Image 1 (cartoon, rainbow, N blue to C red):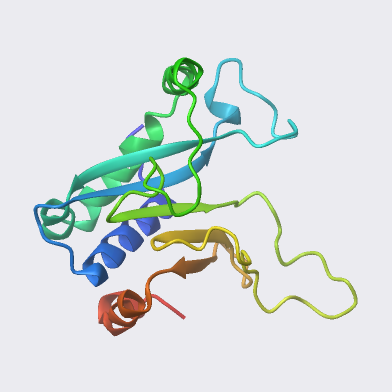
Image 2: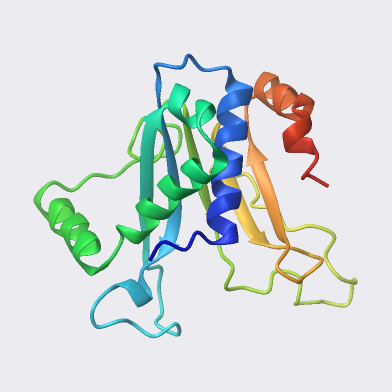
Length: 191
């Protein structure tokens, strides 16, 4: 499929904006990793109600100069290609490589998920984060808590406003967050 989703475009926009705010040299490598649901991607597919986490890391990498020097469409296409590659064959290759050489990354380590100049996007569009109401009124925000607060981590969840909106929790070093907040292109889409 060559159809770039709005979420893939959003991921590409975030990736470009965050790397621009980091002021990384053009010849450096950058990676965007997106956690994706693999239930429908394996053969036979597993039902949505299957218990447990079944996620894979869809990754794409390039030189910073390419990411920032080319169009958003180019970056979104790279994100899309990384996601599409996580088909039955891609998932099985990952599982087989893991069986041959098990590895456990931890928060803050330089693993496949936390590389220098990387962006990691996770979250779930499957859960109505603002639906449960426990007598205190509707939630103002949904945050990920203290876990996994690494530089470059983004948590994306369905937005409070509904209608396809997305709430983003972006974790960056303070100086990088300051630079991101000064980026008029980025801030024109933030609320």
